[in-house]
Image 1 (cartoon, rainbow, N blue to C red):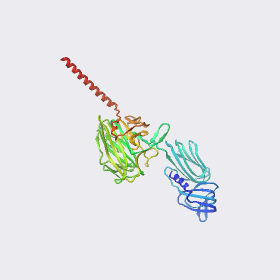
Image 2: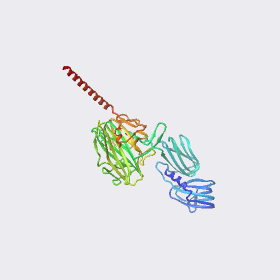
Image 3: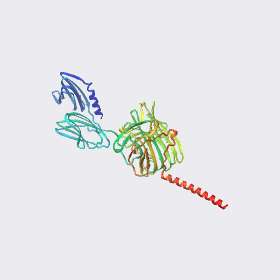
Image 4: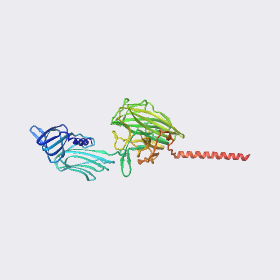
Length: 539
């Protein structure tokens, strides 16, 4: 892609570079090629172009000769050595550019020497989402270039030495590049497949984390399309009526540990960060701990230090994971611990603001119900400053491309293991989850939701997710990997007038307890009334 863009831009610049008007005269250029290069030139008017390679002082090899009567843009491949370019023309202009060719990963960037009437067929890997195929071909003799899909030619360029091809595939399957050589030819081919939007299912692991997730993709039966959202705040709303996790196969964390995670992505200038806001549960003890993490995902092996990111509650630590060193910030100095009762309702909120000295990130938990009574308790348990002079900062969900490290620009509110990459199994779970972003003055739903997350190491088993208009209902059962279109819903947990808007859907166990309680009260009243009647009768 970079090569193609550069060459296209440079061809345009040929009009103002290396310009010469020819008037019945011969002009010569000497070119020293130190690595394989594309020699791209444009002739306007009538001119003969001859390119010779200097083998020694007594011998020159002609590698190209051609006559142009009209405007022509062409090119050939030059290997290492000294070259002489001779232009003979009558009122013609000649412009050229030499571009060094570099091999790129996941691209065929080799030269081939083929005999006459030979062809090469290059398969493009099958992918699941619409893709753009960008190809660049240059040769020292004319070739035929074709792009085929399911044995049908969808693009062709015949008798050419230079090809720039850009093709969009709605379903990129059974695609091949074909090059037919008409004479002995030395040619260079480079291609790159560009994703038009991400596919959440391509990297799906089992088990995964379960909950409600926005990947920036509207996915329905007829078509899929990406969307892009920028915001200063993303919240995860939760109502938990029953929760119990147990995993005896791992010793990474206590066996009854589980987590509810709000994971989002921050863009700030050229930097990209992954932010994690977590409720860590000890489900058998009815205890929760408030924890956060920040990882620099600007590039592979990107670093954080205690100078670039600061907070009074935490510091940066080094983690070796999958033979890769990662630098995590966490609130390791101060992780508040709370006791909880069921039902437990509230919000996880990740907020950012752009300051003069950097980006300020605040991690917040709001509790609106802890047991049978309503409450409102807001806990800003960590404020972190990423130092720098940034021109912009925002939380984002984007389905157009992947992050620099190959993860998603997504937002997740998911259940998983208690920490350290644990996979836990839920023996009991009844919960409802909402995932919302700040749009002007209110928090609103994303256009589309998936039931699984892929941006955290902690995974969950025995959870099934069903979608109800604008929130996800989680119970124990078989994993359900689906996507849903959301209806509109809005709220504002920071506004006192909406504190009582929490939707409570009691589980069957709680409904049974309430029914038994009502029956016992009714029975007691009946017995008491009978006692009073019996006592009055005795008198």
